[in-house]
Image 1 (cartoon, helix red, strand yellow):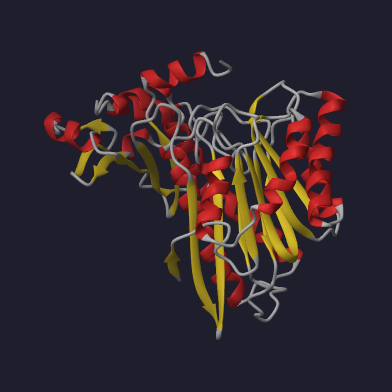
Image 2 (cartoon, one colour):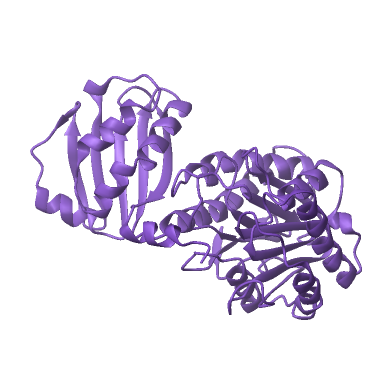
Length: 406
């Protein structure tokens, strides 16, 4: 597998565009991802009972055996909690792109992100759709423009792409995502699109997507708020011309590895770009009894406000980590737990067999001052492990969310 520069336009036959149409103030606010041939589609979506209009639209389309050829996305307005009019406007958004591309509306997925409760400015969106199509290109720059156009409070665009060989056929997987706040997925990310030229059945593609998110997008949290709009949409157009993957064979697992690299990279970028964040926090729980135990413990640590504020203050308060583990709702022996912290500045053991060690506060502060910090909890109970990603909790998080609508 080779990591390459790019995103949703890296794979064969995919084009993208990102433009400003006037939904937001002076920032790109509409994006389009397009396959030049019909593609197999798959996706995972929010578990929030309150689902945005585009989420309901996409879930219905992907339940059927529809070929997918385009994803239209807007930022600035989430089109959630908008009732029947929101559903009507979402369909109008899909139709505008379908008409501009001469596609059936059933081949167009939609996505929206932004303020909840506001109606889409549908006339602006319909007017911008032709320009989106006119701007389509397969260049890296066009992929980046699309990634930028779906940003809300994100401070950086998020892209990743890789290639690998299936026999003598080169396969590419590329993706983009956005997410900075209201991030606590139980399915995927706030918005994500992954494209690939692999030839694979719909059933196997959905299996890859559904399985992978448990270890990637489901393992990040910024603020414990699961969005109404969380959507990960995947298109596979088959232009790599490999032998079709219809079962879990060697080719399936090679694709899974590449897909996983892209999604894990995007997930970590989202966690590190949490609203107001100054650093990425990775929590690794090792030697747990079961995978479920490791997942529960790592997510409990990553979502603890007291842990997050301690990381912000470079304070090695190991008691907060143990406390977060203790209320996670799973059984373990606290007298066996070892806890370490690690960054590019070194590694330090804070807890041995449930008791604080005589560690150097100076070294601990230095380790925690890095931009990427890892906390490791060794349960000493079994062989299972899990990783979760989050960020510190800073003063700026309050500032951003206190006046989000203004």
